[in-house]
Amino acid sequence: METSKLSKFSAEFLGTLVLVLMGCGSAVIAGANGTTGVGLLGISFAFGLSVTAMAYAIGHISGCHINPAISIGMVIAGRMKIAEAAYYIVAQVLGGIAGAFILLQIASGKAEYSLTANGLGQNGFAALSPQHYSLAAGFIAEIVLTFIFLLVIFGSTSTKNINGGFAGLAIGLSLTLIHIVGIPVTGVSVNPARSIGPALLVGGEALSQVWLFIVAPIIGAALSALVWKTVLEKN
Image 1 (cartoon, rainbow, N blue to C red):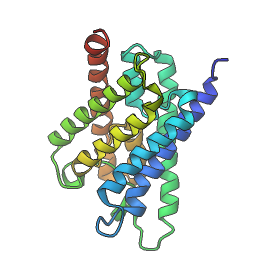
Image 2 (cartoon, helix red, strand yellow):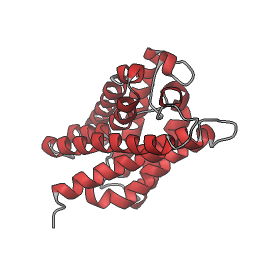
Image 3 (cartoon, one colour):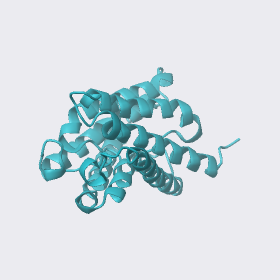
């Protein structure tokens, strides 16, 4: 029996919620202080483990995209129809907002927490970059890192891959690797839904910069899909 639209919508909503809550939560709650908290490696693994866990939890229901860039990439690669991708993206964005909202409620339980000062793990460039990387550097990083991430997804989920059962692990580890390299630059998005949720609640300059974390990942995903479809998979 074909999985219903409601089941897929719910899976994508919940999966994205978990990704934002646990990934951004690791930065806001557990890793804000790199000397006493989980630090860069801990935050990187939190994002990677979140994707791995959700891949095995909801992958059989929706494919566990939990990322608009992935859904758009799947359309370009011919693995998904536009109409289906549209409601996936709505579910992902709503899930990201819900995850950020829950994180805010938890973080606000500490008297010293300030939304303005501590944020919600939002992405940024220039003054909002963790190590003050420029807009250009952030844009290039998000395109390239998303390109790499999508290549891993296309390859590990290919019907020609005899190790397809380990796709969730490969995808999660690749996201971990991407965060290890990219956190100092932008905090790492490679996922518009992951960026939109925190930015909406933090507002201000974080919201004004969120366009980069929508546009760049989509460009990276589109390029990856084209390369996969016309060069790698074709051969």
